Length: 160
Image (cartoon, rainbow, N blue to C red; front, top):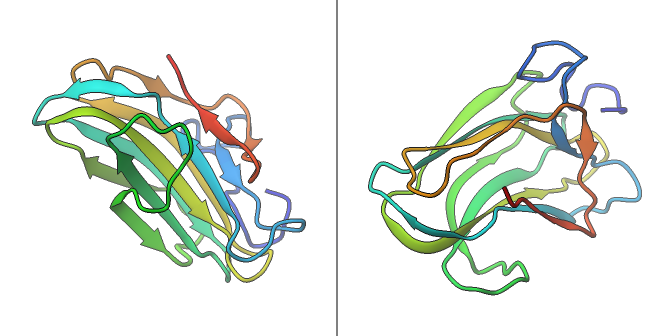
């Protein structure tokens, strides 16, 4: 990312600057408390071993938090009352860490990756290499080939 001492210096997939990742830029015009949301497509069913794995990077003195939330309805708009099933907060240095989120057996559901802007510009959050494992009907892996900044006014939906 563009600000000093924030964001990843390299992507997770290739471990260099030629790869990509999705990130939330905390610099202006962002304001403390703004959010960025990445919505999954709806999945009709999952088995008991269903797991969502991804790599995350939270670097900077004012990183707020990153959450994975789950919804079970057909609403198209994000709702802050969705169930939080994973969360990390604060600075984790310039390193990629892996998250493993147990989803388990569920009927129709959708995941929401939600990043929150902290109190200043030095708090970028990035994600890379998203995948579902052992999930019936949820077979996909996402690797970003270039770095993308997720606009706070856009809820990006993946449909594969």
